[in-house]
Length: 313
Image (tube, rainbow, N blue to C red; front, side, top):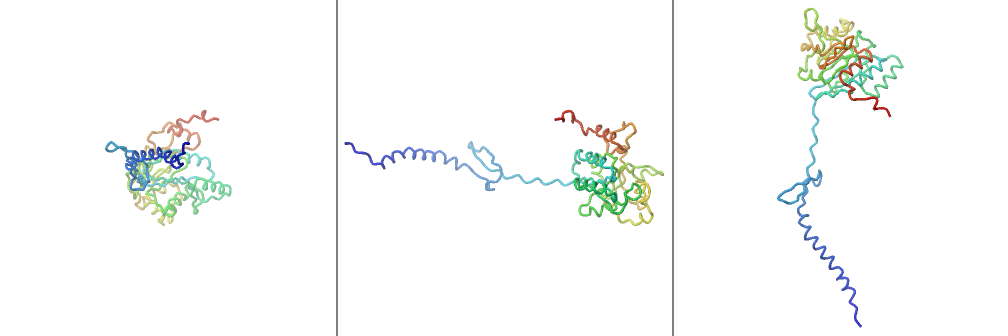
């Protein structure tokens, strides 16, 4: 009778092929494992493949350095003087600014400027605007007006309100002016940062531009700071009267704003027939109703490419 082989011998015979497979794996795969290298960052970054000396080689790229934020070349505060009840107008003006291309390398902030909001209904609704948009400035030292001190209150308050982050320039404009911010920033880019008075210049009394049109004018930060401390303005009661004319008077008597720049014809009043738009516009004034705002948006292609028929569900 034949004898059975011991169980242990059968086990060894079964394991032999498996051992051979493991040995082959070590022989053929070890060179590839030795060829893998990891960068000194310990594995951070993106795995990139590269070829060297005819062999497959892998390394880990160092993470890209964070891009340094580009510092603005200039900063501009745009104060839009408005009145509490003009809710619809402010909505239009906000859209007009929001849908413009950003001014390159410039910090531009737009604020809607009120005097004291006395009516309780207006106070609630303006407070909603402030909470929603964060672009409201209420001046406590004046009653709402056009030519009885509001511009003085605005310019004299700016250095205090924004002392922690001053601007290079301060602008006063109206809520019926369409300002093209990038065009204005380009005009300011090469200008001095001190003693500047820029806008639509009026010629008067043989002088080329003793004052700038109230549609919108810019002064440098130092001029606004001077206005905030110039007691002689109040002593002469020079806050009463046409505000643009008064600002020119303050600066002329004090020898301020000597770097003057006239942006005519790029700043202008829109004609009755709305046919005098310019492609190089900096600011167009007299947009007193929705029809005139719509004409401006159409001319400057603000809504180009938007087909309302395709927006229906």
